[in-house]
Image (cartoon, rainbow, N blue to C red; front, top):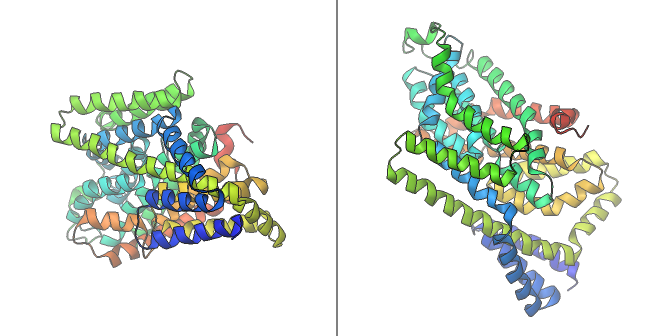
Length: 435
């Protein structure tokens, strides 16, 4: 069997194993090791596995992963999400769909310190959904908006997904964060407009909504600012210090984690919750680093089998134009995003598709944003988008069919947003200085 055929066999085996439910990190390590052994022999493959493991674990650049994860886990247990929702409600009370708009606003701000789509969706659903229920909101609008709002967690900096993309493609983490800001704001604006439109179709029961929901609240600007302050100050110090060249991305993660811990202690977060935050960080890091090791080993299979080059040659000889190639890749991302966690999907697919993107002349920073936005779309696309199940778990008792119906307008909104970002790359690149 030629190295190229071994490469194809490894790709096929990878997806079969994933369909069977194996952890993606373990699947990548196993398939990569077996494939590399078949190409160059067992002893060299063992040496590569040992080297990949050591270099991944000791890579200083990867230190920012546990630091930003810890920051998000501590903040999510500090009551910040509740404060953000209360503050956002002061701004949107009196609007049609004001509670849903408040949930979206809180999700956007929470994303600036979370970096995770699933964590944002789960946390904000637990905070906002009971309030929407009490006010008679249509469950479709409530759950659909919260599922969509959760996707902001992997686009608005400090996004773990953008961070990993930058690390594995050797791009600047700071530049990737900058590239995600305007698309994240665009997502928030379009989602909010969708809420305002759908709230007039899926209207609350007027006999249930209390008068305070339909009457504007006093301005209370100072109180609103106080509720927003912890998340905004943390985001400002971390991102401001990073772009002000006061510290590196890794140091920014350290500052964020330290400030989050101080804030959690100040808010008197129970010891059990603090321990849970550290344990969750360790478990998540274990999964991510296993995937990183697997990606490193699998990368050797791709390079020695010349699979990426063969893919580039095939697409070049197929008569497809650059944009048609990109469209095929994005459709693949949407399908994968329906049943695969975003970070795992990026680590699995980017090493395969990145050479194709470069060969077709696309900007790697711009493609990183497009890839993450497409992953977002997959995460809320019925019937198996992962955010749908996260919202179902957090909302308790809500039918999955209700959530699927509720998220459809936001899927349409995401398709429109993806089209805008494809048509106008300047939205992603304006702040990066790459125009």
